Length: 122
Length: 316
Image 1 (cartoon, rainbow over the protein chains, first blue to last red):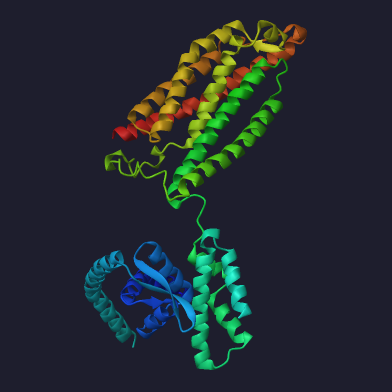
Image 2: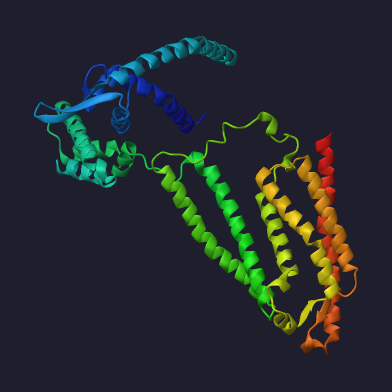
């Protein structure tokens, strides 16, 4: 697989997961940059060009509430899960857990196969 | 911070007017937060540092498109329907232009085939380009608020209605349908031109059909009308089935027999008063038409054989 193919597939794989990660992070109020830092601290690296428009889209869909606040001498837009967003997060979390439990054994088999193949090549 | 202002303004220019202020405000706040964090790590920031941060964020146009993705004029779901509509409408326009030009040709005392072809081509292109633009704009106007034109048929289908996988020919090409329609209508106009062309105009013509040939052609008109109806039925179904094939076999058989009979039925053309002395030319034309009709009869004969074989395959 070429690196461009890998990049494309990684992007597709991450796209849906990022929504879940953002919704889960916004149980507490965050402004754009603090949300990005929080995700980075949890091991999810996301560039600004993807995160900020994503947050706006989720807010436009009614999943997030937002308000402008003055803090540290600067205005910032804080986002937080709306009631509708909270309900959706619960459903998406269930879906994610089911997928994860289904994917686990599949990926274990793939890992075993990869190990067997690398053993044969040695 | 001049660079940040320029950057935000550049992004705003690429945004729809109603979203410029809000997104610009938010983007500015996010960039300032980022620069603050960078400053805490690096110390006082130079213009080069700020430029590097902005460069990393991406081109203003790309950033604007991330916030408000550009929308295609026509939604992807409606593209197949748009293509189908364009093909159908341009096909119909072609038929109408053939009809119009044929009427003009029949009315004209001077038969000029090059002018006839040019009239069809230029007239068709002129109308087709305008119609193309209008149809695309109608689709765009419907799609602009998220509505979709296609999709209602997607629910009302049955697997049994699908054509057989091993018979690739079962799908009827729109090109074939419109070519047939144009040909049939052209024939009807040629045959029935005495209805709208005055006897004086006909008399002025150098060469016309003999009375006997014209009578044969007129007797055959119901079959041509049936062929038009068959083409419209094909347009509706778009898939060859037993009934369509059976009717196509019958119509093509009738065309083959008629064309051969017409070719062998004696003089088909007669000369006008101006050409009475050039009988030789009229005889040549008549012979040419006879051979032309015999060659033309090969086409329905081929389609007759083709559809007969297809019918047999469908019945298996």
